Each structure stands twice: as structure tokens, then as C-alpha cells.
Figure 1 (tube, one colour):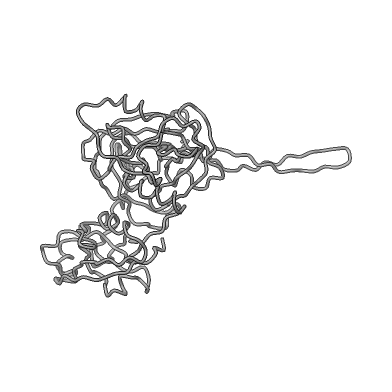
Figure 2 (cartoon, rainbow, N blue to C red):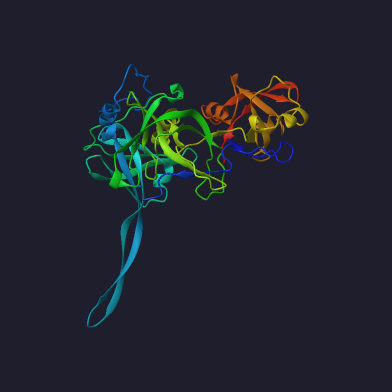
Length: 393
């Protein structure tokens, strides 16, 4: 939908938030039904935090829903067989665990349990196994996976599942609230570990690239926490003190480009995003996104000088996203008459302060929907009606 881009030269080299830092996905290192409507969709629960709560009680109530996820890949071995009259060789395949992560069971219905984890936990797996809290190992089936949000849904037989988790509303979390991170840091040897911290920021933009490191999907909206998140915690839940999952742990900031070590900066995918993506993966098996066909940069990355001299914005415009370019000649926004350096400030009347707002608003629509884009071209406020197409990313 939006690829974060640099407004080369004229805008003082504004870049995607997160540039200059190294984000490490936290898996590749050796690592009954509640909240479900009658139609099978997973829902977000109302917050129930009141008074003093006990982290031990929260952990004990939820630990049965947290699992280890094993990414297993085929290993081919050759064996030779000799006899007096002939010799032959055969090839046999076995599975070896390439990496380990975590996951959380959120629904059990009709003999099937569904769990969510990270895309990068299961990417490239020839077989996926899930280890329950009691040590039971079950082969899982991949329901669907989405690289852009780094989420995947698996399903297993539910006969051994005793606990499922509830999702809380990540839009209602606040800086300073206590949270727990539960998972398998460093793999199954440390399964069901729990760490405690706070919400450092409810909404951050963090770098999000493809597995090849070449494709920029646009920065992801994430919850920042100082709860310890280590390799193997990927896909595990970030939990509030009401025992509700408010995020899925995904990555941590480990060092700057200059090699300076960073501590206490972990990131989780907000539960509202998780619920939306999980429901779509269960229903369709994949995610299809609407697109405006624009490449943008946050206005707050643009210098005051360039806002005045290049964008020629009125001083009252404090937030928004700047069009740096278009996806191709068939860009819906370009067809609607929008141009490079236009500054988008609202979509269907909803204020857009930054790229995070833009993604949150746009991804609630469907391909083919028409939206009204409010934007500034210089000092003039304009409105364009854009019919969204399918994202190519």
C-alpha cells in the first residue's frame, strides 16, 4: 500500500523511521473457546484491569496456551547396501529442527485449535511441530502466513489443549502499564519462561523488510516494551495484567549502525492487528491488501526549511505523509490527479499524522473501495477520490 521512501535531496534526506538501527527477529537462534463469536471470528475483549493484580496468577492462567514452535527442515542422508551379487545406494529423508520460536493458542473449536505465531518462525519449514506446556508434541498445519505483518496461523488437533488465550484491545494500552512476555527464549530448554516489564510506547514504527533484506514493506506499527525478549520468544504473547494478549512478540533492537549495544527495546505486533490478520488468514489463507499506489515519507522527517521552501506548506500543517513517488504508471492516486510532494493529512475525514495512521486507516478498507484523500499541494487544501487497487507487495 505504501512503501516508505526517501525524498531525495530536496527534503533533506528524510528516511524511514528505524533507519540506522539493527532490528533482530527473535527466533533464528537455538528457539474452552473464549473471545470467539458464533461465526467463528476471533474478537477483542473489553479491558478488565482493576485494582492490584498478581503476575503469578496471570502467568498460571495463561501458561497452558503458550507453546513452543519448531521449524523443521528436511535433511537428506545417503546409505549404502552391499550384497554378494550387487551394490546399491538409497536416500532417506529426516527432519531436523532449524529454529525454534513461540506461539499462543487463541481458539479451540470442532476438534481443532488455532494458534498464532510469527511468519519468520515458520518460514521455510518442511514440517512444523508444536510443543504444548505439558511437553506433548503435535505436528501442526500452516493455515496461512503474512510476511508484511510477520504473522502466521497454525492449527492442531485440540484434544490435548486445555487453555486458550484472550486478546485485549491494543488501542487502549498506555505507556507505563505492566506487561508480561511469555515464551521459549533460546528454545524448548527454557520453554514457558516469563519476563516482566512495562509498555515503553504503545505505538512505534520499526523497520520491516523481506527475508532477503531487499524489499521494504513500509515500516510496521509495533508496541515497544522493556520486558526481556530473546531469541525464541518470537510469536509468544505480550500480556497485560488482566491476562489478555495485547501483542505478539516479534523483534528487538540490538544495536545501532555504529555498533552501540541497545538493551530493553523489544517490539510486539499489536493485538488489534493480530486479530484482523488471523481472522483473514483463517478465512482466506492469505492476505490481500488495498493500495493507493504511493511511496511516502512522514512529514515529521522533513526539515522546517524544506516544509517552507519545497512543500510550501502553511504553518498550521503539523503532521501528515508526503508523496515521494508512485508505485507505477497505473497508481490509483496518480490517476486521481495526485502529484509528488502532495501532503496527505486525512483519509475519509480521519486525521493522518504519520505513516502509522495511514496504514491503520487504509488497511481497514477493501480492494475496489473508493476513499477521499485530503491533502495539501503547497498552501492549497484539496480532496481526491481514489479507487484502491490490490497491493503488489
